[in-house]
Image (cartoon, rainbow, N blue to C red):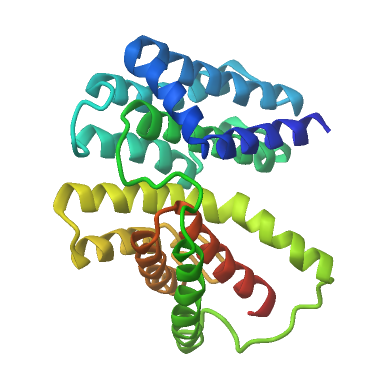
Length: 294
């Protein structure tokens, strides 16, 4: 029960930051007193080690690894300062990689008991998302992240338009290269299928959209201009992040190809909307259909 409460608390904090008022309040504090930002890695490490203690996996090596993981990208941000530049700098990209790659490569796996790995991975994933938002949204204060609720009807219509346009293409490519079979009906209850919307949105779609659209795509296009080449580059990065995903043999080039095309579609929806919710909903719909019908 306590484990579930902690995970729900992380989700609540991530969703709370959609409040523009809360963003302005925290940003004001951090920009007036940048040293306060050092609380972020301390709190992040504390949350993670609390979770580790709950499952009997706490250790000094794990605590040190968690502190280094949260402190080094934070140090990059502090080195640059709050809203110090109108566009992303090299250290901003370094900070993103330092948040993403250790999770992607599961570098802490040798330090965690096998029985606790799934739970602790979900906790550090939530901590990473919160820290990323703290660094780039609240402290560095970059524009274009679109971390706000939908502001106009177009933000919802573009989701449906994107899905209708992209789904046949993704299905066709996926079947052609052997990534997915022909469609079939999943023997799941309506309740389970409905619950999956929320689980996929919170567990996969929103976190990945924060990383790959609000941060990586947004930063590439801010740094090198709003070009199709930049959007393609961000999409390929998204695709390559799926090379270590099953169910096919690794590296899973089939998944990488389909994910690259999907990433391009998500990126276009992100560009045409005023909220990251739009691309996250689109992403969720694609994953939901894949899970239950392919």
